[in-house]
Image (cartoon, rainbow, N blue to C red):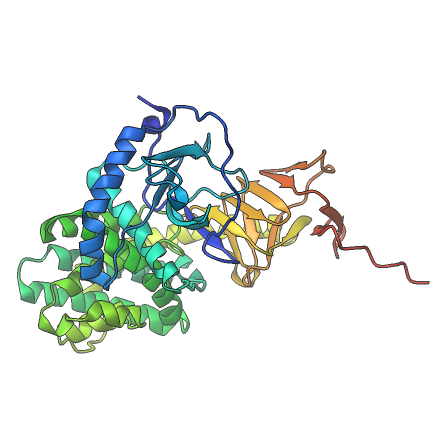
Length: 450
């Protein structure tokens, strides 16, 4: 049994963003023997299994093939196994060592002259979850190659008590709709979900746009994965229900909620009858998933009521969320003192690629969002943070707590982070006592005023 087999996989555990392009990189792989930590035969079988469905199913869903070169990378040794050689330079699976300056994540990656579906190993042992992961990331690659770069906004309202409560009530109603065996029961459950959705978005003015962007990006991708993962409607509904169950266990919904909402709405639309035909094209064009389902089922716009919440355990949920809000406020205050009040080290983000867990983000209002665990690669080198890095709302600055000592050679360590500096980069005093900022090689301190 290999090292990869012993590692536990968590769905949607890693995401990646790039400020310059979708994970583009020009580096070539290192040429040296690869440790035997990946099961090449098992991965080759997984690649072939996906290849058998990616073209027909992709064209059925989106009008384009989802087939793509696949690349699985071991997160510790950086050994990779690819489904094909770049630019036809060899036959059979391509095995090597991934360059150290590239980020390992589930994403679309342009590297070595090829646009890949990159996946962090190990792949899920469950066949359905393995197929879902491959299809999810293949959808991202397809949209990237078609020129659609996913946009996202902050969904910080989903970290507060009311936003979280109404989102979970919506999920509970969607789960009831997926389990329903009669049209009338399903319609009532969908109506409940849409009421909670509308109530949440009325409370938070930017929620409709911000949530819609993430549902368009990750929600449609996960719907694609769930759809290709099972052979029948019953199996797809079971996977969507798993996603809804798993979603409530996450510490944060801010960046992860669409993995649950997207498949639920998509599958309900698939089964909504003739008025839902063409919904995928409309969704790609920006139509809201909830509005599409409401129209397909000819539902009105009923008002919220205590009875609706009671059907889905609203009282108990609100009590649990009040306690969670108390603990979350204390955690956010501690992070604010550490990463806002300082002293801190600020790093400029120029061509940033970030790897993180989307289920653990902590919004800090106007200061940005804390990523409790993340790896950032940029022109200044790489930052590995295990106790929190704050990204500004405009994604132009990353902040960690200031180190107590100077860098040693190219390596700099602070409380909960390690920074590997590229040649020439240095630090300068920040605007407040104890603060430091990272400067590019060409930057020079201003001349002293006379």
